Length: 318
Image (tube, rainbow, N blue to C red; front, side, top):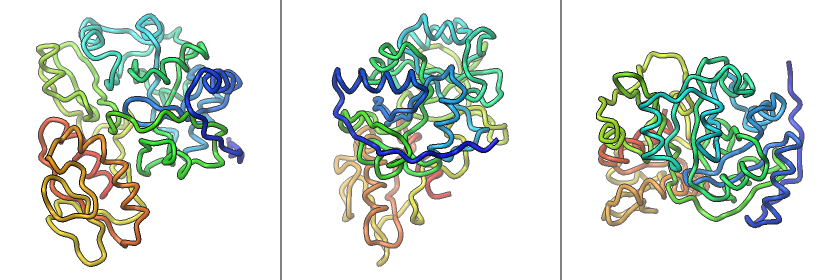
């Protein structure tokens, strides 16, 4: 089936009571709306409506085998959509609301669109911390499927203007609540009986997951089928070629630095990894819009949230 891709007049509206009501009306009418979370801006739509979820895939140009994260406003909503094990409940108590997504067995009576799960027996759930996303879920009365609000595979948006640059004309509305705080997509984990599989690194690190549960944390098998967002080899990618581990810029490069070094833009002059994570996608957007032909990125220590930063950079350079 071919889905028509309509062209809209996209409006960016400052987040508030009136714009929230309008966004909720659009959601209930089956249309996607761009909304901030603490990680990145998401393209949200009713996760129980096949046509609404199809509109997300259409606007993004996203492959249908790539499942979507479903956002909930509270634990009762999460439990109505998926089966939460003791380990999942422990992780939820520790990290929800927040930037952790859990891949859980979907309930047979969840009412979720089959497009959300991409035909898998699991669903990726998150209870976000950002007040705008949680308010939109409550106001619309729907769990919201919400991948990043950008063309599939391109740089994730951490500001409303990033959404407009990528999806202008593809959605009716962007709720603007300024830059996101985390700047990297959520950690995705699959809690199991005797271990936790880390499917996508993010702000909640492997060490944090292990400490909260007392279980070993293993990285999801590299040759496994796609079972969560963010696992495609090429993802989060600028239009320009990206060179990693760069200590200096070549003549045709825009250098994104880290720590004290000569560069065009610096993720964190103080070499603070959390600050670098928050600034990563914004810096990639700026570099991609520059006159330089290529992008170079300084080495980032592979520790803590640096693991997630390097994951995004590796996929951006693929």
